[in-house]
Length: 93
Image 1 (spheres, rainbow, N blue to C red):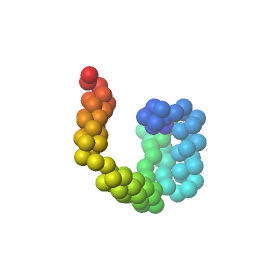
Image 2: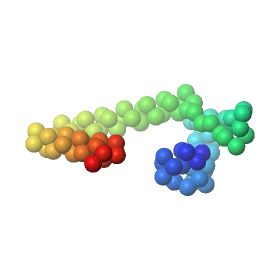
Image 3: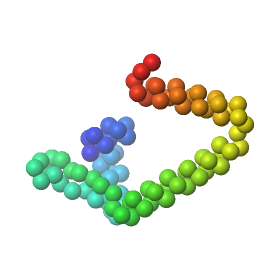
Image 4: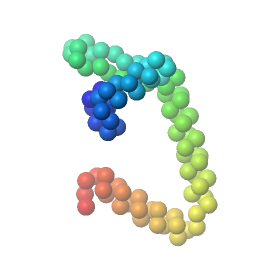
């Protein structure tokens, strides 16, 4: 849970509540590590994977629709910005 909280930039109690809600909804399984009782592993259930896939497809379709509304100059600007963001997230300047 600690690593997941760090990735999502939320506190341990917050990520624990979120994961508990996802487990209760049947979207995630939480399993204790057999070799270290302090560790809990999480993974998507088939229902969770289906929901995630459906959500991603809807978001992608929306973005594709909106991108088609832009003119070529705006698309070029976005491409340049994406390259800068990739460089920033890779830790290079």
